[in-house]
Length: 102
Image (cartoon, rainbow, N blue to C red; front, top):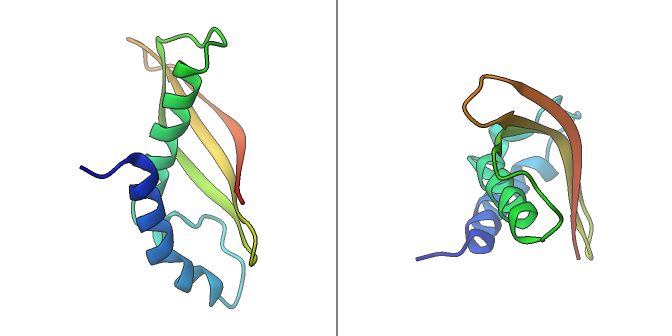
């Protein structure tokens, strides 16, 4: 079974050629990354729950909108809007996020 990191790498590697060749910036890049947003939120949620920082386990992540993409020889960066929820309710809210891989 593939790890979350392997899954996200696979989705990003498949989408990066399309993103690198876009002629204009997009509002959301999700359509080019084929499911990467759901893997990203799973990865972030797992990190928050395992980090021991008092993360409320009743909170969950619904999805994210990827609004920023950057790629250089040394770094991949993604940014966007995380969509959060609270367990057993329909309450949701959004917050910005950013990730960098070196």
